[in-house]
Length: 231
Ligand code: SAH
Ligand code: DHB
Ligand code: MG
Image (cartoon, rainbow, N blue to C red; front, side, top):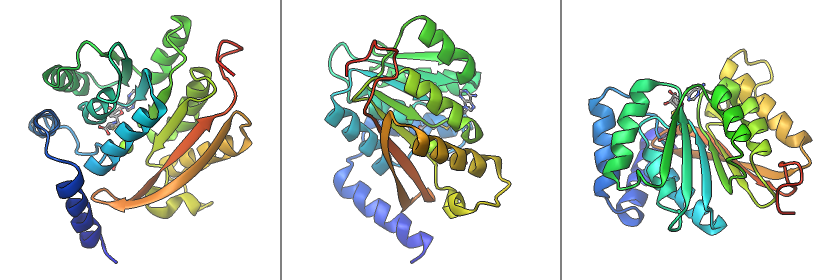
């Protein structure tokens, strides 16, 4: 098994199950033209996020790490009428490209992009009582993932789903001696999840057009919102 085969299978899946879509295609094109790194979720992963948000019946979604808004569009399209998505992005150029992509997709009314470092914006969201969110996607700078998970818990309630991207790091997740800050962050994230009675979680390894990585799915089984959540 090799990476070429993973890409070929992702293409087969994409061709049959993920019809090309003008807004998503345009978002990817505009992101490339603006020089953004092509590190967005794959089409198959984007559709998985969309389906999970639908299964959850999510009316409120929080995304940490927007880039050009590709995953944002997949997620926002899962919202019912009147649903809201807040996405956090620290890089002004990424935010500008994402805003245009989201508007072109017809989602400007449902999506609020907050520019700023997520660790600055998350306390603001809590202070503004913008939670709880039904669905949270963590996909920003990897070493800070444990802090984002702690905030996600605070901004969730029983029944919320927290998905975290890029947790397997080409298998380095299993390397206790790794000095890579991203790997260390993802190991510490797993330790937190393991010790956290408010969630039930698993991590799935993935291969595909983005190589070998994986994501964690954590279901909040007990409220994190100081009694304000629905038990
Ligand atoms: N979710 C996107 C990909 C996000 S890539 C998709 O799949 O389409 C990670 C993004 O997180 C980058 O745009 C990066 O600028 C942003 N980021 C990095 N550090 C951040 C921080 N501290 N706060 C908010 N965003 C951050
Ligand atoms: C990378 C991939 C991602 O999915 C992401 O969110 C951030 C970075 C990467 O391959 O560098
Ligand atoms: Mg990612």
